[in-house]
Image (cartoon, rainbow, N blue to C red):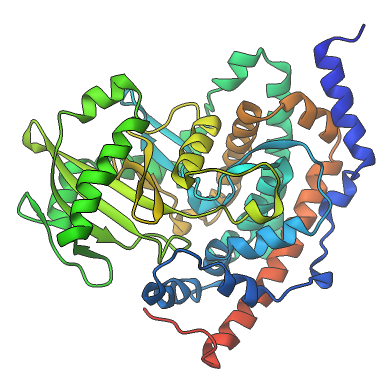
Length: 433
């Protein structure tokens, strides 16, 4: 009788007959049944129409910025290609600037994936392909030659494959808690860590408020919310949010009282989604809490995947994050306000992000290696590492196929970006700065 592990390994090897490892590197964008700009313009359900030009303006800065804001295009491309059928909880929007530092519930700083807006159950290689393509595009933006970008993408793919093989061989709970010890040695991560160490909630008081109890207006970034909208957030929205917290975390949250509410524009892909900040106070003025209430819509991958229906999209994101991360935000939860679903979390509580200027020289490769290990740990926690590892095997076929895909998809993105730029010039797409 076969052991459970050997049966899982056999399942992974069997999937090679469904799609070979070499074919992981094949693109079918030349057979697209859609126009990428049409996909982009169609992915606006639930967003604030007047803010869409700002989103497109931010995407127009570079091919990498376009890639970050155009996850719906890559989701459509991935869905029209054969896949392994080996499912994990996808990060969904895996790219290098969605890695960063944050404070764990016990006060430690950790470096991990930190954006899960598109999280959903899907084929493991979709995350890997998107992250690998992002490494190439981020490398080109930070003045690397294409050969250096290819080397960094290879370092990422090899790191992922080695980590998933290692995690598959470990005891299950040890694998789920796996610590990545080389994190602070990477220059880009070290800079993010220092940024996170310096940051604290009191810093945001001077940045976002007039004095201590009211938000100030910052052009194209932040403005106060009044009237019924404010009431809906502070009464109905927070009441439903409380129900999503476990008792021990709800107990802590109940010590804070709300002072003010503002609308904040964030990110690139998230621009035009409703994003509120609630200023709260605990033990006096020196104990502020900035609570982010961020609108969540259907994942870009949802139209292409079965059995991925959620009553609340904020719950989808929060549960996806908890499956992937060993430790998550102490106040992570969800709510519903009016017609929309929201994720709730702390804003900028000791957070630090990846700066593209830190990716020059060896910075890109060192970050790529850590990204591979982080993604492998998330997939091992939310999927079956033994199945993935046995599909990948001991050689380099899968890793090199991923590298090939990344380089080709970066070229496709550059062409899509050129089409996007032409659509702006022809006024098919309106932008704002």
